[in-house]
Length: 380
Ligand code: FES
Image (cartoon, rainbow, N blue to C red):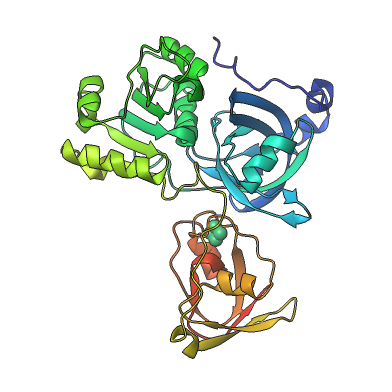
């Protein structure tokens, strides 16, 4: 395999002629898609990874390069049944290939956006997206010895990190342990196997809960416990650990590492289930009668709507309850989708990296993690 063999192939209604001989390609060369900006994306390819996982490859409609760090995500905003819904998806491609980038999405039972992407998005279609964002990235944690631990769709940020290390010919020592239900659920199996053959410092281990239909599966069967980790990665205590997967998996991994006397200063995990669940925003409980006693008045300057809300609820919750259309995705102050200008008043905001200080200084706030401390006027 050459280092560029797995570039997305072009299929479907957007022909390679249309995509690559457009004169704009070269005239726009050098433009960048940066954090916080919304762009029109063109879907270039849809690829089946497993029976319920697909990779969607894109380029910017204006040929901008996507500037991101491995492990970060973009927020896609398809229009579904007349309503714009925003969801975050981790980039599975490497930032070393900034013009063609991809998200890898698992079909989720009842998942509105993931199922819509699986059933509707085809090569040649356009999609609005904003990004990139996220702090689950090895940049800022330089380490030569790495341990990537993932389960299910949590593989995507770690795949981006591995692809980046591969493309950069970085002299890294990576052990990538991926846990799945059965061998048929392993995402990126062939590519990781080929990369392992070409990258001396990369070792991949797939751990399956069961064999499923593959009775001759020769890899480990069961869950990753301290015994399997110690046997497979005896020097795990010397490694910088990056973990991504469902919350239950990450809790179990933390327990295993704690039992193995791992130093958690070298531990990093995705701060919320962005790569796995990421379907519906968290639902806040309605306010109690006691909370309703302290109410603030909220005015939406563009629509002229006014409503009251208690101090203990988020502005996003109250605005949506009042019928305002506010784009949102993570509901945890990470993705930046709900960023809105606060024109008057004050809020208490507890974000998780979804907004920069210079944006706060300009008066922007993340409504999903902001609670009012006075009456407010919002640019909505
Ligand atoms: Fe993600 Fe508010 S919805 S930061």
